[in-house]
Length: 72
Image 1 (cartoon, rainbow, N blue to C red):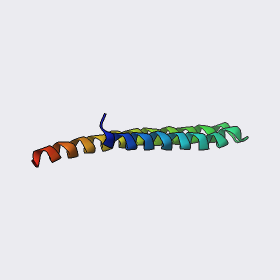
Image 2: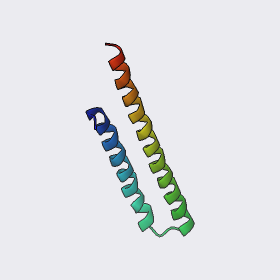
Image 3: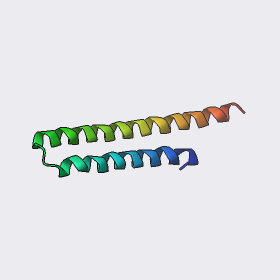
Image 4: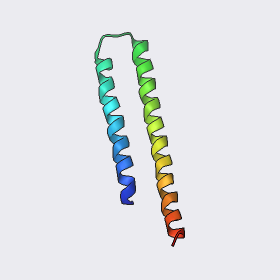
């Protein structure tokens, strides 16, 4: 694994964990179950988007690295 890929991976993991821990507040409160389900779907959606963005960023880094080799 290249060093340039480590920070996007770490950032994604930290961001998803922070959102997950923050959402625990809502699950511990006494609110209707349908609100909790909506919050869960939003959190899952955010996690899926973060994984998608991570994959896209890693592709960009790989292409950038390949383009650097063609310059020389």
